[in-house]
Length: 536
Ligand code: SAH
Image (tube, rainbow, N blue to C red):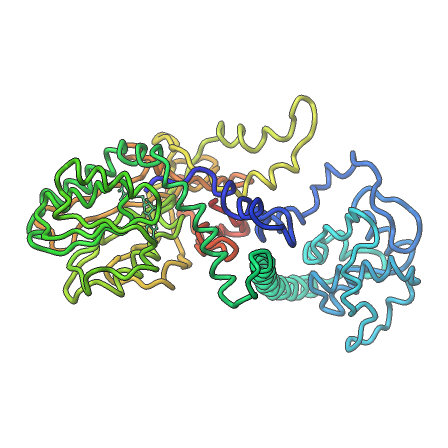
């Protein structure tokens, strides 16, 4: 399916137009980006920065967070990293500690010998920043603990290798649990925000608040998604994608036995093109459902082609409707998004399958692969990443932290591929269940050239296979004819040098963005590098 243009136009932000904004004003904020933003800039950038970090215990201004911590250790004999570790402070604990010190102006000696059980900064009031734009509050305590220069601060003394390793493990453990806690907290916040917005909306409408408010809001968000499909242009783009549309057509026309005298359900019919192919292929009845306004055009189109006796068009979300039949023999749908799963429309197809598909019935397309390959394109990397090092003579390197985590949708040139492709996931739409659409998979890419790997490219292949005498497939990969899905490119911040013949091993994790289940988080672990990308 074509991708709706800019989800930010109608996801959280459109909701913000219609509803009072109750918490954060920027729905694009996400955990991945926050993580990135919390990393302080690299050391060579720090030297040239103005002194803007106020010491916790005196009035001295320092040029960076690490410099401030080193100053605290040398001048005030307090190693904050030790305090963070000793009390196992998570992100919140750390924030509260900083605000506690600043608001109570406590003496450095007051931080030593505190009992673990009751810390003086436990109150939520210490979440409130004391200084505006305090760089210490924008710092990830985990990063501080990992910074070896800070572990070696005078008050700590030199640490043995073993001790450092233990610290690294403990930090990793803490990072994991903080990440989980943060994700839970973000989810809770989001739910609260929806609830609060629902209450306000209900109050405005003179209705009492009700528990359905959250569901209503979800629907509001979806309304924006569906309204993007109301415009003709997105359908024009899909119909003009010959690889896509002709594959569906060829599958139906070349396998009439699959359709002859069958009841077919088209989930998300758009202009009705797939429903009409199915009718021409011999279906007895086609029920075509779409929630977007485009269905009114489909009604005219179906009539213009004298197929109204065969095709029943119903406006609505498949999840909200009661179909005029108990069961269907075949389900067809074009639900694929960028990197296959973006847009999460497969969820709706699985819903329809589980409710309406007769025993022995089939969903088409039935098989889908997601593949990865390594890319070596120094020029592209330069254009997107190194570019920020010198912009009209100014250093904008901090922008890289915003650029890298956004996966790019673009066509990858064949001659920039530097590995064999590897399939990392296969779905059978007749069997897969919802929970399997979030997954983790180890991969190994066989490198063909000795060069720098600058990105990983992802794409998918689609198969019409089950029970087909004439099987049909298409690929959205860089070796195949271009489709409107192009490819999805995950840029590496620092290129990895690779040797011909080596296996580049890694792990990919794909999960839904809980704040916006139609968008995805994709995490790559490549040896010592880990990067989460959003696909919005
Ligand atoms: N089948 C058409 C359109 C595909 S685009 C074609 O191949 O050209 C996907 C369509 O599915 C959009 O028109 C969208 O409005 C619709 N859609 C997505 N989720 C849906 C749902 N849950 N219920 C009904 N329609 C849905």
